[in-house]
Length: 166
Image (cartoon, rainbow, N blue to C red; front, side):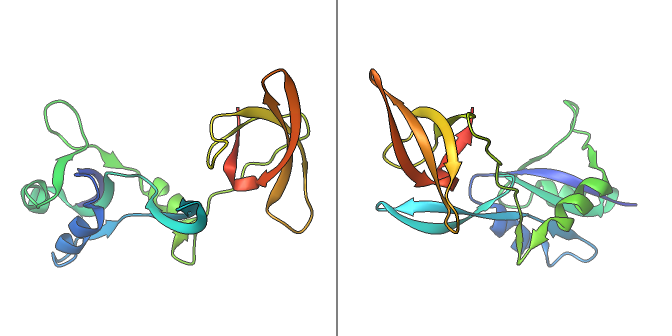
């Protein structure tokens, strides 16, 4: 009987494993991806990443294909108990992730900030600094943050995607 399983994959081999397994009859792979803003040489760009790095979901008949999948190049192990028995992934989890896919990528909701929320800058030259969210600017992806620096507080404008709630 077919069921969804989670497979632990070697680093950066998710797509290669999916490519190898797609040729097996009655085997379906699912490797959800996200698109986020990143930086290359201090310039913003869009980066595609796996939603679950080092893991792939596979729908297959375990008695028939488990051995083949375990020994596929790039596969570390099937996620399961200490005896090697794989755990199944509930269909509702896969359906939920698939329902969030827009334009080929899983849509993640941007965190919503309220005035006074403590924040931390996650990216860029100010990464690691903490501050307080003040306000969102209209028609842009920028926000105003009160940055806590040595013995003072400074107002700065920063890309909304570069901050996270503490």
